[in-house]
Length: 214
Image (tube, rainbow, N blue to C red):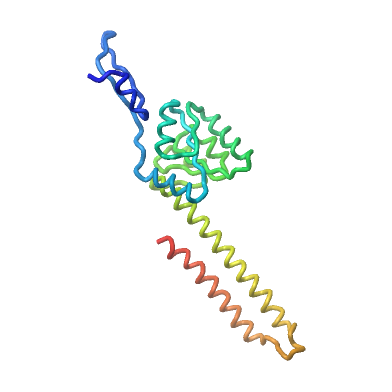
C-alpha cells in the first residue's frame, strides 16, 4: 500500500489517512479535476492582455500547483468569503477592472463586488442570482468568448457611431445650403436617399458581428 508521503507528492490532491482501531488501513486522496478547456482559456486571456488570479479556500500547495499548471498570474489560498471580496476591492483600488468567476455561496460577496460577476451555471442559486452573467455550459472558454464578443460589440458601436456622426456632419450642412454660393446644394430627396443608405450601412455592419461569432 502506498504511504502518505508517496501520495502527497501529487500536488493537486488532498490526502486523508484511513485508520481502523488506530491502525493505518489506507489512504484517500481527493482532487478537483481541471477542465480540458481551462489551460487554453487562460492562454487566450493572456493574449488578450487580461490577467488571471486564483482565489481558493484550498491549501497553499494545491492552489500553487493549479495556478502554476494553468499559467495564471497569481493565487491566494486558504481564503474565506470576505477575503475574496477584499481581494477584489484591492484590485479595484489599483485601478483594475475586475471580473469574478465563481459557483458557490462563498463566492457571492466577491461576485457582487466585482465590476462583472460571472457565475458558473452548475453552481449554487445564490451565486447565479448575485452574478451579472451566468455561464450555462459551465465552460471556462465561454468566459473568453464572452469577453471577445463584448469587445467586438463595442467596436461595432464605435464604428456605427462614427459613421452616423460623420454623415450628419457632412449631409446636414449640405442640405442647409452651406455650399450654395458655389452653386452646390443637396436636395431634400437626395438627403432622404443618403439617410436611408446610412441606415442600411449601420444595419449591415451590425450583422457582420453575428457572422463573425457563428
